[in-house]
Image 1 (tube, helix red, strand yellow):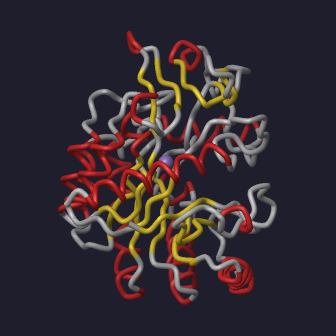
Image 2: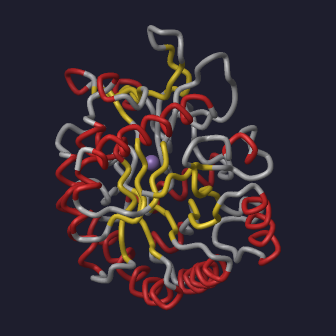
Length: 348
Ligand SMILES: [Mn+2]
């Protein structure tokens, strides 16, 4: 595995100098943040990221993410222009040495949590999703909002785009995803870049909007839409693992064996009793509901050689900053992943 770490660019409080001191670190995971969704990234911005990264001894091989414009997900007539831009971005980052691109196909809301700083008994704070609180939120009629919502929408724009999705069936979203993949995967293949879709987070429908990258059955369907190794997945253990219906160890084994996992997000979640939701927890298996050792072993045993990054961390030791993306707890996660991987490989 190639250990990697997300970096939000030059505005990130977590610096490349911090990241390079994590043992065994190989690549950063980053993106161009200075252009709106759907536009072509400038070669200058890409080159600058590459230069900064490499001058700190880190590889520039993973992009997270090139976001997919809503018109593509909605299947609007304007989608072709945005898909063309998307293909151009694949070409440009590939020219700069990028080998893996993470993206998602979630309507409007991307990841959803009800609180970003829930205090755990040890005094650390973490992201949580409590179903009771989500039920109270109506993104169209209500006034309540949830943290993490795309601030680039005004209230009215949000109402409109949500209303458009409410008309859409899951089958239509599948058709739009297929249309997108049929156009981008040949470009990715030509550029030798692996596309790695991220599962929906959480992996169920919210606010009545369709969500499809949610479970094994749907991942099978996704991979068959364009049956090419460049059409693969980001196995996000926390996104899949917040539903007890998903057997993440089995999925790691199955999709690694197929050679379709290109990127792994490792994090642990605690599923709460009585369908109350979940809390993000420290990476160490006993802190949550997932068996991180078994997941790492399933990847190792099935020949996984791609990128792994510690996913969200808690805020610990008084750190403040971007929720889920502080330095300390993610670095603990990275060290834990190293430990698991070393132990597994040496036991062979
Ligand atoms: Mn993730």
